[in-house]
Length: 313
Image (cartoon, rainbow, N blue to C red; front, side):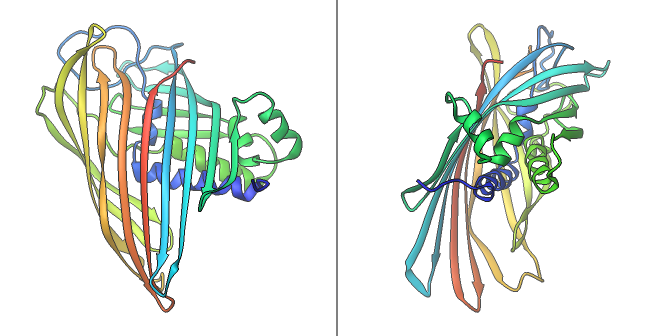
C-alpha cells in the first residue's frame, strides 16, 4: 500500500466533490424531519428547533480510461467514500425555512488503481484518526472532520445560503475542504414540489449546469415522479422516482473535441410525508465520453452508485 499524501487524499475528496455534483443529490444530506403533520399530503421537509439526526452516505465509483493509440494502456480506478453527517436544527421560521448546523462524524475512503490499493482510511477505526493527526496524513479529510457548516434551506429542499467554518491557517487546505463541504450541501437538482401531491404527479425541478473539468459543462434537467404511496412500519411513505437527461456543452477553449456516448442517471427517493422525513436515497449513474486531441482519442467511462440512509446521531 502506498503512503498517502495530502494531495492523494485531496484527490479523492475532489472526485467526491465532482461525483456529488454529478449525482446532484448532495444536499439531500440536509433533509430533515420531526413529529407530526396532518393531511393534505405534501412532499416537503419539516423540522423543529433542537432536533438532531444523522444520515450515512456511501458513494462507490469506477473510472476506466483507454486510448485508441495505445490499446493496451488501460487504467481502472475504483473509489469508495463513506460519510456520516450529523445535523442539528438551529431555527425554523413560520414558513418552515430552516437553519441547520452540520458536521461529519465519520469519514472513510479507499482508492484502488488497477487492483492495487493506493490508500485506505476510516476515522471510525481505533487509532486511525489520531495517527493521521500525528503524521500529517489525510490532512484534507482530517480538516473536514474538524469543520462544520451552516445551511439555510426551504421545505422544498432549495438551498438559500451556506457557510463553512474551517479551522487552521493553511489557506490551500482550507479552500479544498471548503469546496468539498460546500459540495455536500450543494443545491440539489430535485426540488420537491409545492402544494399537495398524489401518486402520478410529475414535475421538472429546473435545469442543471455542472462543470466537467477540461471539457465544458454538463447541462440537462431532473424530473421527479411520485410513483407510489405505500405503508412502511406503520406510516405512509412516498416513493419518488428520479430521472435525468443531459448533454455536453463543450468549452471552445479546451483544445479538444468531446462527445457523450452514454449517459444514464436516476433512482429513487423515499419520503415519509407526514413527518417530512427522507428515509433513503438510491441513485445509479453512468457517464461515458470520448475526447479527441492530437494525441488520439481517449475513452472515459465512469459508473457510480450513491446510497443515503438513516444513521445514528
